Length: 232
Ligand code: 4GX
Image (cartoon, protein in one colour):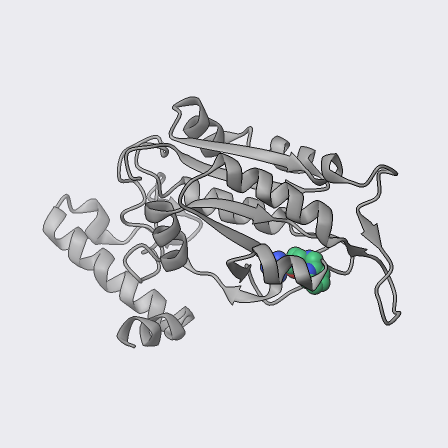
C-alpha cells in the first residue's frame, strides 16, 4: 500500500468544484508527481432516465433528499476501481476528524468521499455502503464538497514527497501534538516590536529549546484541550 499511489474518489453533484480545487498548489504537485490520484465522479451520471437524483422526503418536510440508487451505483463504481478503500460520508453527524485520522488514512487507506447536498441522503445508502461518517467541524455547510476538499488537502500533504521541501510538515502544528512556535522574518524591528534575541543569537541549541518551550506555552494558552488529548 505504502508504495503505490494514493487514490481518492469524490462523488458529488458538483464535480467541477472538486476539479477546480485539486488543480492548485500542493494537490496539483502531488498529482503531477503521481503520488496521489484524485477523481471526481458526477452523481448525475448515475441518475434515472429522467435525470433526477433527488426526491421529496418520506414523512414530509422541507427540501429534497438524494436518492439511494444513484449514490449506491456511483459508490459501487468507485469501489470497483479501488482496493483497500474507506468509504466516507461527510456530515455534521460524523466523527470529528483530526490530524491523527488524517495521518492514519494517508498511511493506510484509499478513500471514497461522498459529498451530499440538499437535506441529506437516503439513510439506506449510508447503511449499505458507507464505512464511516466524518465531520470537519461543528457547523453546517451547504454541501459536502468543501468538507471533501478539506480532507483531500490534509491527506495529500501527509504523503511523502507531495510537499516541496522534504519533511517540512514535521515541525508543524498537530504533527507532534503541539501547536507551532511563532515565526519571525526581517526586519528586526516592526513598529516597536523586536525579534526575540535568541533567534538572532545563532545558537541552534538555544533556538531549539526556545521553540519547544514556545510550542508548549502556545498550546497550553490557546488549546489546552490538545494537551489533555495528548495525555489521554
Ligand atoms: N463536516 N455538510 C453534508 C448534507 C447533509 C445534510 C443533512 C446530512 C444531513 C459537513 C461538516 C457539513 C453539510 C455536509 C450538509 N448531510 N460535512 N451536507 N460540518 O456541514 O462534513
